[in-house]
Structures are given as C-alpha cells and as structure tokens.
Length: 163
Image (cartoon, rainbow, N blue to C red; front, side, top):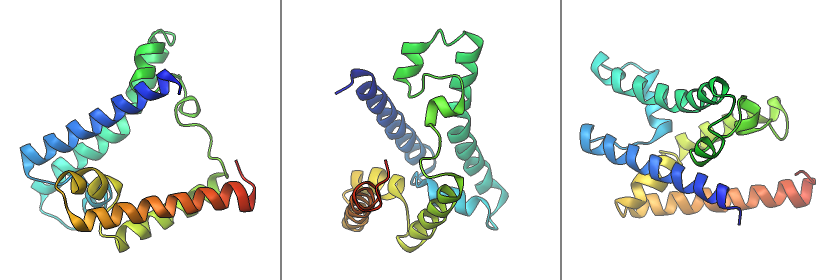
C-alpha cells in the first residue's frame, strides 16, 4: 500500500469525522451533505440557510485553498498538501479527469442525486453519522451503497471494459 495514499485517506477521514462531530455538537445537526445541499435551495428560514451555505462553501473551498497554496509556493507543500488530500496545482492534478467524460459524469451525478432522495440520505449522513449513532436504517443504507458500488465497478471494469 502506498503510504501517501494511506495518509491522505486517514487525514480526510479524520477531517470528515471532526466536521460531523462539530456540526452535531454545535447545532445538533447531522452532516448529511446531500440533505444540507438540497435543503439549501428549498424554502427555509434565513437562519437555517447561513450554516448550510457555510458548510457547502467550506466543502468547495477546501480543495481550492490547497491549490492556491500550492500555486503560491510552487507546489512546495508537496508532502504536507499530499497528506491533506491534494498535491497538485490544478483541479485535474487533484481529482483527475472524468473517467468516462463529462456527459457520463453528469448522468452519474443525476443518478446519485436520485439515489440520495430514495435512500433518504447519502454516504456522509448514513455512513459517517448514522453508523456512528448505531442506526439500523443507516447500516442497511450503507450496505446498499457498498453493494451498488461493488456491482458498478465490476460492470464497468469487467463487462463494459472500462478502466
């Protein structure tokens, strides 16, 4: 196993866990990203939108901040930024190009959105927060996510012949 990849995963997991814990402790809310983003665009009292907008902007700005720091330092933060989850100075260096093209990525995003609606939540809400609360419903949802992911990877790699 690549040690840098392991550190990236560990660092990302710790940061996700800390943010979920902070949101629960500070506001009594579950850090379900699909729910936060979806209810941000629906009619809610103004005080509810402030923390939701801050949360979504934080998710978006994290990788952008790492790219900016790397660009300013000439990628001098290679190991430090790598441990934080990104070591490049461009978006493609951080997340890579869409494997199947932009159209497939849009369809996949739409299907994920539909799935989070049908499953009443996403991997962050069920997999991180729900499992931590020992929710049987979240265990069932998370197992469904994992089974669907395994089947999808099998089909893409071995049936269709993708990457």
